[in-house]
Amino acid sequence: MSRGYEEELSSNLYYDRTFDCEAAKILPGEYYCTDEDMLIVTVLGSCVSACIRDRVSGIGGMNHFMLPDSGGDNSVVSASMRYGVYAMEVLINQLLKSGARRQNLEAKIFGGGNVLRAFATTNVGERNAQFVKDFLAAENIKIVGEDLNDIYPRKVYFFPATGRVMVKKLRQMHNSTIVKREQSYASRLTTNTVAGEVELF
Image 1: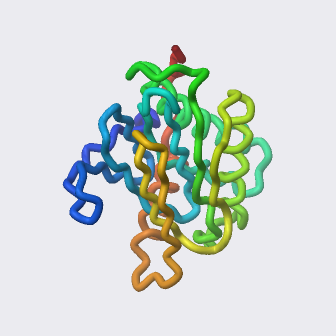
Image 2 (image 1 turned 90 degrees about the vertical axis):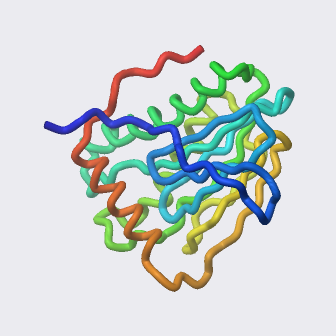
Image 3 (image 1 turned 30 degrees about the vertical axis):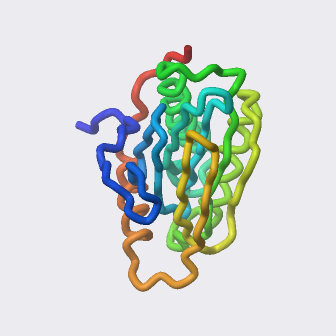
């Protein structure tokens, strides 16, 4: 019996010596939000991350997700979109619960690289990138920065308190860790169902 699909709160907290601050590392299917002056970091291949913050209070968070591959089957596309909607709503809901105000939200979006070439749908990264842009437009959340598509994985550093984001493109991958991690995540998505609706505040 497959369990319901759920975004998980990252529990991978550490002290980042480079930036001299507390940090949270998020993996595919995870998110993190905070009202502290800290760093949230992730590595993206075909997945996308939305870095969303309240520009007044500095409360912010990041998610890391992928739409399940539809294999070119249009009947599966709408079902796969539910995963993206759920991933975005979970993050926004947590931000609002933490005290962020919807009218103050702004976003920076990253990822969607053409990294998982083995997938049946060759444009999985592009689909993820287009989805997050469309979702934010529909929710009237302004996009104030983006780095999408291309062929390289990215390491993203997000400082919610200030809104600063640093992106490092990983032009030389010496191992397949990112690809294997995203392929494993993608295979979980195809066997799990989306959890219940998320209540937005």
